[in-house]
Image 1 (cartoon, rainbow, N blue to C red):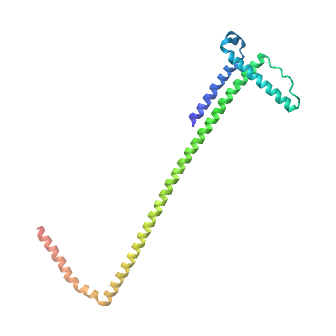
Image 2: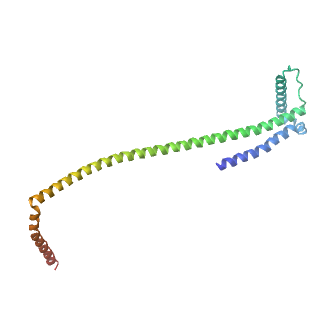
Image 3: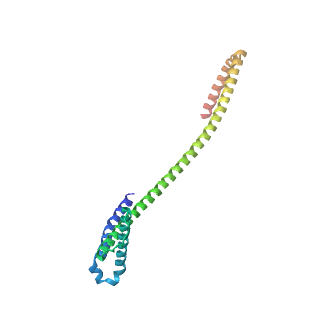
Length: 197
């Protein structure tokens, strides 16, 4: 962005001396008299441009004032060269400025379009992630429901077993088996100690 602004400034800076050179070459009558054959077309172009501008200006002025356009005397060659050179120089500066403005607006619109495309792409990615997370959340909710049902079923079974055990005297049977179980555990520990020795 800064490089584009620097380039614009450089082009404007270079355009001014070029415009001055155009003006000087068109105005320098002695220079043209010396090299008449070489720059005759350029000089004639400046003169005809100035005469056209002068005639148009006089017609517009008389039209606005409501006067009829009478015979319009042409400008003298010196005034025509001077006016044509100024018009060329100003036209050159105007065209350079217009080209820079059009180029800058094109570059800006291209950058905005690129930025908009990037934002659209990021939004699409985020929408895909959100839809993926919603799908995953749905599957986790289904699994959670299954686990909750399974947990409820196990809690009912365990509650039923405890009720049956308390009512049926299963606890007394477990207590009766406990000393035999402890004796088996102690025997297993002694055997493993003997095997180590």
